[in-house]
Length: 266
Image (cartoon, rainbow, N blue to C red):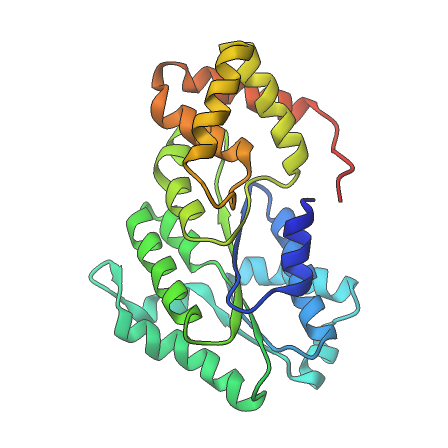
């Protein structure tokens, strides 16, 4: 896994806002457990806004790392709420209400702050993903903005999860630009090194070496802060700017990614 990503999970700097794009929930469970356990071991409380199905996976992963339900309850470091119910509490006419978001989510964080004054909170949420799965990417983007605004005023880090296919052109054109733009740390695939190699091979296979270099150069120029992995930037750029060839590039990248062995990158 990417070193910068691991640093976020371990250190979770205040107001950091990370996102993991995943296909299999087990990928997300690994990150969520690592993120929460690092915080628990440091005495940092957590707020988890997850679906019931995913919470079971998270709980199993936490138990494997020594934080079973009994220990978590004893320490009192975790406040977990249902993602669907929490989302419904601040949606108005199909869009997140800033006032209700402040009341519901801000209130959730206040409850933890009152119990653990002065400690950083580690938050995880997947309400944005629920909105995307319902075909409401604009509402998801609005919700990300509300989280970022809240993060500028409160002492917490935030990890989000999106179930998206990085080899799908619609995802690259509609959802992923907003997702990448809203976060400080982005993990576009479980194995970013393998993704980079797959994208390298796909671009050279479809476009040739000269055009591959040009695509990387143009893609990199759209993210001067270098927050987004270059392979993801290249897929996003090709999907938007080269529609006639994008499907071939994406299909080739998918094939190379699935066929390659896992990388050993830390």
